Image (cartoon, rainbow, N blue to C red; front, top):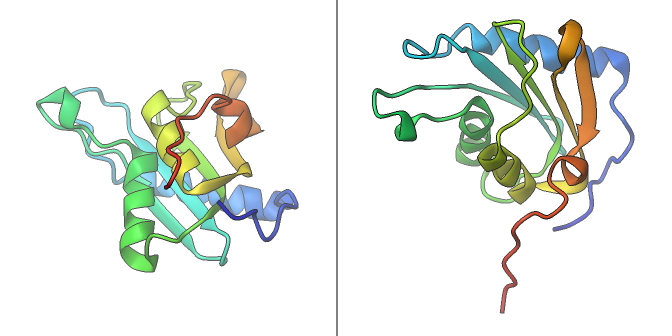
Length: 144
């Protein structure tokens, strides 16, 4: 994958805006089984911001996570060459929650190692890390 064209960290205003969008879209989540409503906001390297929320299903395996929902929307709107500069994840349950393993792998697919990931941490704080730190042994296919 090509390197991130803007590897600088987000300024506090950008990070707060991304987090606010993640919280706002979490209100749209369909979570009648777990009541765990999650939202995600992606800042693409081209400056576009795309959001998504979790959509549960009675057959739990068919549930779509917020991060994957946002990434699918971004690919649908902007094509398969999107790259994520930063992603903010939020939930309405005031609970610490990192992206799950499947979401980490999906984020990685459309990121660079320095893509910033924000997520709820203990005590109502927001943690900041990179996708490389969250998924140091990502699954990669070599293209022949």
